[in-house]
Image 1 (cartoon, rainbow over the protein chains, first blue to last red):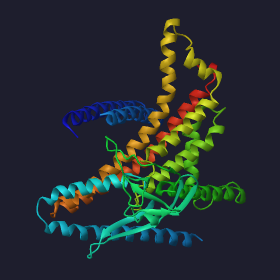
Image 2: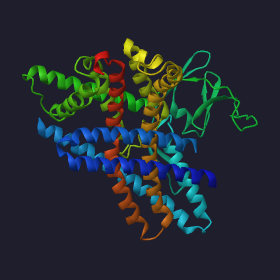
Image 3: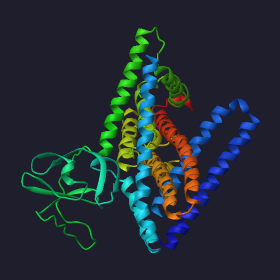
Image 4: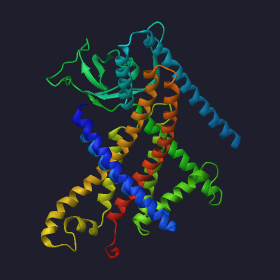
Length: 63
Length: 369
């Protein structure tokens, strides 16, 4: 592995981490506001996180 | 009856633990040889760990639990041979023990075969492999339908699921719609998939025809992911071909059960200006392929990443060579294994969930908007 690849992989992980972190944080906020809707919020959160993760992995393979 | 099941489970647990303890016992023995040698051995140890990880991630022609080098310097393998099935101007079936774990050639009906980088090549009697400029072998590759380790595990999981669920179905019939034994544990999971995955995403009208696939794929992926965490060294979902096949089934089901509405949304999106429709059509068409592609990559990459990290952490033990290494690597590996238990279920859930979502798009009625 050479340096551009490592830097690229790092950038991808930072991006994906920020994205999933934001989703998790927003989901926490939403659950705190409406605890009765937590089931639906969790499902939506997982789907969004999975989509970001998929793109992140695809980029990692390209890097 | 219950006691017998308990005894069976305990025996299985005991066996798994003994095998793993034995495996751990044997590897340090091998490493003591390295400790005695000079510091430059650290580099070779690192490559050895890397090679071991790469080897684990590949499919193999025998079901091997572990191998070690004994005092006499011979490689001892704890493994079971599996059948090799080749099509090379006629069907050739032989046991993979003929390869001696890739160390020797296999002679079948006057033809010689060699395992090179986990693929079977046809060679001459000396087993020479010729290369092209890019160091790819140019030898003839016979069509390979072998029952490899992954195929064996898939068959076993299929059988297990068949017996699990047919017994459960029988117990419903016998017992007035109340499942007995193990079925009691499965019922809430099945209900969860129906009520929280299938019905909200696909809709009450159409969900029934997709239930069988969703249940199968959920339990298949889950059981196989869990098996990947046992010391058996099973790694089926980190083979991209397996996840490709699973994603392909989702794609085919989506495409062939789609209604008029779905295709209309792809080729002639309603409610947007006409020039935009021409731009959107190719994007949407590409989207139908990207969706199953992302399913494939997600499952494959998650499980592969988990296995690589777990084995690298176990490899730390051999690199540190001090009292810090073992507790550190044990603690990290234990924590990571717990995380992987979650990931195993989560990936099965995500796969099922997204499949249901795609099916839901395919059968969406027009008046849903």
